[in-house]
Image 1 (cartoon, rainbow, N blue to C red):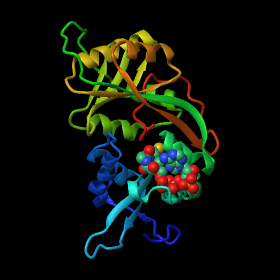
Image 2: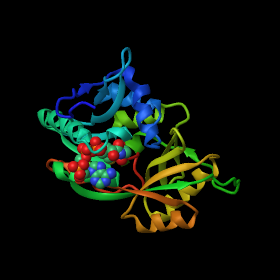
Image 3: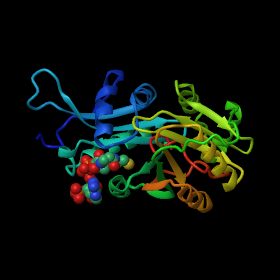
Image 4: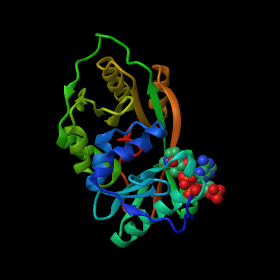
Length: 280
Ligand SMILES: CC(C)(COP(=O)(O)OP(=O)(O)OC[C@H]1O[C@@H](n2cnc3c(N)ncnc32)[C@H](O)[C@@H]1OP(=O)(O)O)[C@@H](O)C(=O)NCCC(=O)NCCS
């Protein structure tokens, strides 16, 4: 293997979606090709290719993406290093490349870190904010005794998201909502997006005026779905988290939200579940 300090960091393009997907699949993540296409089209994605021993093709071995949401805030995600290239400084170099770009553009950066990722980001100067919990429901129960779900209003959904994030991500929400298989649903007191993932459907963001309404929304969604489901709940929402585990959801892993740079905004209201660790 080459010396990591000498290895080139490249900016990836639209043709790299499949190779990116191979990396996130190796890590057992839920992102699908549509997610990679979005990052490659709207974000700045850095990568490292292994050129040694490949006469014709090269293999993508590491990535990190910077996704600007506004002129002030961006998300970092898809920080992935293939197994046999780990612990050699590649993730640190790639996240540094994202931070350099963010600094030039005057962006505060945010991310949702896995425990292994948090070990990389802390020394780079990221500080912790809220915590999340990834939960899974093995198979959505088949039930007919639930309130019918109505379609949610996109404008109301965007307004809730701005209030929860402190900045405007309408382009992202429109993209996620517009995908085949996505549903923006409402029960009058709560609203959530349900979308496809590689291995499970994902619920989030989810906004509600209280934990009981948020739990009712999740119950109604689960009853109207068939396969496995994932949700990234905000850990501070104790009653919601407790209710989910009582409904049969199991906690898979924590995520630590972290920020690099000054706090640009103060979110008015926490959501019950987020759009996903890759999007915030
Ligand atoms: C997390 C991940 C990106 C780290 O990539 P990497 O190239 O090995 O990271 P680096 O070599 O830059 O690590 C820098 C430092 O972070 C810490 N670190 C990295 N991985 C760690 C781990 N698994 N456990 C504990 N500390 C870790 C170490 O202090 C390391 O320095 P050291 O090797 O000198 O001790 C990689 O393990 C991976 O792809 N994991 C699966 C996907 C994932 O969790 N991505 C992060 C999403 S937020």
